[in-house]
Length: 420
Image 1 (spheres, helix red, strand yellow):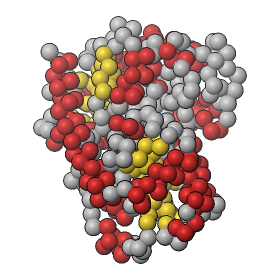
Image 2 (image 1 turned 90 degrees about the vertical axis):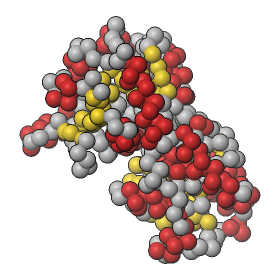
Image 3 (image 1 turned 135 degrees about the vertical axis):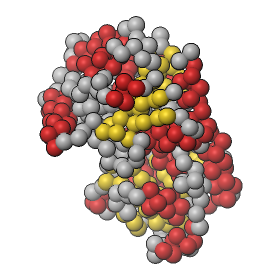
Image 4 (image 1 turned 30 degrees about the vertical axis):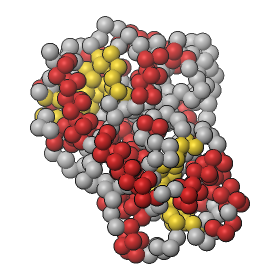
């Protein structure tokens, strides 16, 4: 059984990380799996790129820029520029040797100029079983990756809130109809990384008649594991007598990740407990503007972009808790990584997050968009909980649900079923 996973990147973005982990998980179970990407950034022998020349590299950039430019003309504001994909330009991978040899084509996140509607049509015409893992909502919307409060995907997308001039026949409506035509009578099985997204997909007009399974992302528990906190803090010149809060995101200023709510929660915590002013510090990693930390009431240690996996593991391990107040999220890698390292997590009760965090067992689920309850969760986790029990439960949650062998075997059983 030969499986070809397809994703725009092998390392850049949450979907790429999750897809790469699944690749490694499948191969650890003696399944022949490869990953086809637009541009390879890792040195994995299981990853192959469609880009093999300077000209193709330039063409990739042109595709990406062209799609962004076309949407920029229609976007409501710059804030949504990367939250909507047109998929109007891409490359043909149907003749790629990996695709030709594969028994199953397993799509993941294919946007930003990699695969277009035409590309997908050619893939589907091969009449091979298609598995499509959804890392967001794009597959069943008129173009947005997360719909927010909009539920037009349940009927027919139009009057899109991401557009400057929404109307009944706007670009979201046209893309919705393109997807309707693309999926008609096709052999596609959709997989979501969370039960939350599975329920939403089943409520969508485009996917409700398809087979939809829920299989979580896997994580390498031999890499993301508890380490000696005290020695790590000593090596990073951190004070072992202080409490360290960790926040991390690819882009810290991404509104969907909720840094604004974290800022509010820290201010509330400082007002309620001014005696803790000198005993709490914040650690952050990810792309950021230093100015966003200037108004925070606690000292901030900015680690910047962490690209080496061992450095990311160390960041989770030096912290007393990880905070991710996401407003919309499927099954965030960062939460799973933190739990796997035995670090409890405080987050909002939304999306697929409750499928990882068990309230007051391995973390704290705060009321949605409630900065005060977020502050309560931080204080409870730091000062009122049995921290060692929380930490043990965090690790246990991952070992029982998200390991390579558990997740890989769920996918392998699905593949076998589709090939019967």
